[in-house]
Image (cartoon, rainbow, N blue to C red; front, side, top):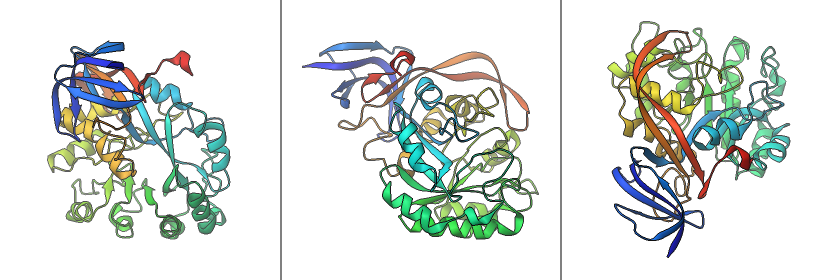
Length: 377
């Protein structure tokens, strides 16, 4: 047999199969065909991955990809496939009134595999200056449920942003309840964007269902770290109840102080996502791999950070049967990384700095057996 692509001698890190060692990986017809210590068959293309890290294709569970319409949207292939992410979840850039345009002009045309959460606001996110829920007449439950049902192959749930610049304080719980009702209308999950000190996280999570997601969970205030500087028993119990805690770094939503507090309490993120957007792509976020590197620096193992960007988001998004793993027969999505040693500076959303001696960098992304290059766009 002659394979389409053979990746030789890389350190394979696949938490789904508990693989962490040197293996060869063969791809045929866009699928993982074999994973062995040594594969001797011929291949049309061969990648020498000696000294590199080979993982399932990375999954970024929080991006903004509705470029040209959403004020935060970036061109998806350059920021995702170009930086090691084969699958991404757009979180609330579009709503019931704008999703079909987003799908036709972006989702169905790019090489990055894109899924979406509908914003409970029917307009989605248009302006950084005018919050999409300042007028609650935009929070249309039935319209969101109908659009989600119609596009269930790409719409996975509902996003609701509860920062004070997006929505009035008195409307927050109403908006959250409407998001849950809309998600229940088509069997999706809810992702809640937390973002102000006036509403403690515990106030919001009690309304969430197992499988719902808190994004920006590791921000300086309004996240898992309480005003007293600790991870409370309530937050710990909410995780045990099945609430998912996502990083969603973004331009204003990740704090090294909170990360250190959480690590000390044994409270690690369930999923690591970037929330990369127009306001964070040039720093402090840059991309998912840099975000993963920060958590590696603060004490998570390589296996753990890879799990948080492959296996766990695949499970959360309902795509684990075919993505987030290197099991034979699954889709041939692979990310090749290099772990560099040197002097690096990481910056959080509070513009605090920390010095590090390791950083993950992207070498290549492979989607359905095809090596991504910018000129393929």
